[in-house]
Length: 78
Image 1 (cartoon, one colour):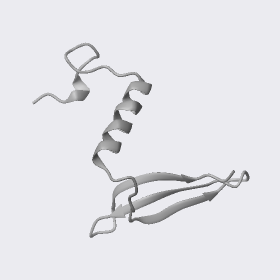
Image 2 (tube, rainbow, N blue to C red):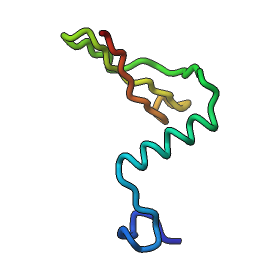
Image 3 (cartoon, one colour):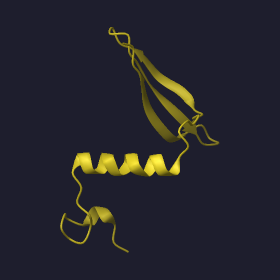
């Protein structure tokens, strides 16, 4: 079986611009998820920025404590 990483653009795989891919993901998420969701995870790498924003990662760990999923997050303050 051939991996998608082994193909060059134009070799039968779709080719997306950044905007097109973001719009596609946005449509998929809007159609498949409810308007509000809660996400569980451990907050790691919490960083406060001087502009009032906060940045952190939400991490889900496996039974051995190894990260198995990470979501980068930001809390914006205006």
